[in-house]
Length: 151
Length: 151
DNA sequence: CACGTAACTTAGCCTAGGCTAAATTTCAGA
DNA sequence: TCTGAAATTTAGCCTAGGCTAAGTTACGTG
Ligand SMILES: [Mn+2]
Ligand SMILES: [Mn+2]
Ligand SMILES: [Mn+2]
Ligand SMILES: [Mn+2]
Image (cartoon, rainbow over all chains, first blue to last red; front, side):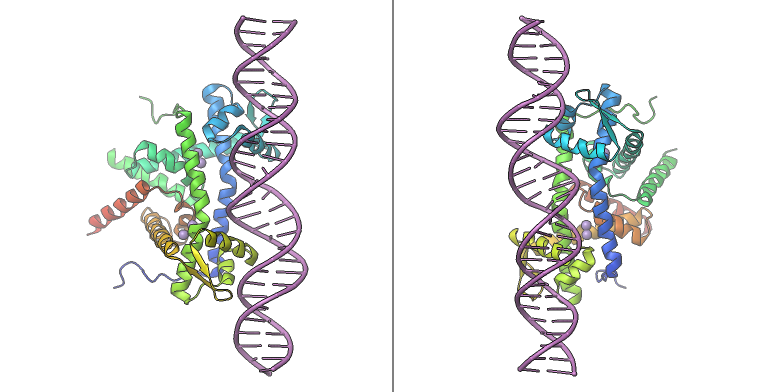
């Protein structure tokens, strides 16, 4: 009988720990992903990506942007020409493309299950960093299936 | 014609910033949620919640657990009787209940859209902290609808 | 009952990512 | 060309959340 495992037991400790470790890993890469995605968007839509605009759009001080950009440079994702705005390395462009594709997939999926567009965008900004490849594939399948029905 | 807004424009800066701010807020509360949820699980399933077990299951050192518990105590979520394990305050129990319900809703939803149980658990550990109330409601609707179909 | 081990805490360190205030640099307009 | 405002950087600070190593404390067992 047991309706919906209310007495779900705890997983093995090491497996449990691995889940949290994966989550911490995702948290660490989230900032880099958001920054390179934003830089790519600004380059495409405004022609240049300035630190001021990053600060404004991230809701953060310019000093914070400078520090973060320093880390992104150290990690080979961003290049700067002093007082000339920001550019993405090949690695940065690749990360941005992946981040953007993932972001848009998550948004479309959330809208498909009934969220309004603005909430979908808000939630996607966080959710995108924690969805595994398998989850993204499931989202894509769901969207594809839905299009078939509409076909 | 335009198939799927490839030229999606950037949102207003303040709205954009608000999304990131919300995400940072969610990140800040994630640790507390995971800890109180785990403490509640351990209390229920093992009868007590020891710091050692938290460390093992979180994949973190005992010193880290001590420090984190200190913050949770400061924030009125946890109580400790020295060398007697951990307990939740009323606020802690409430947060744990909400976290657990949300966790399970996310897991069920992920399974419903085609994820295997283990991946669902892994992803839920991160996703749960970034799904808005509206998103959770959409997940619940989806599950309810699915049960109707099966009915 | 004492004593070794496990549990816990403390001390000291680190990084990411926030902040403000104070330089510094660039650039456009008078 | 000069000069002031805007953009950027630097300096100095903070918290969360990690770590290791070195104490302390409690407890079960011989
Ligand atoms: Mn994001
Ligand atoms: Mn994004
Ligand atoms: Mn979690
Ligand atoms: Mn959880």
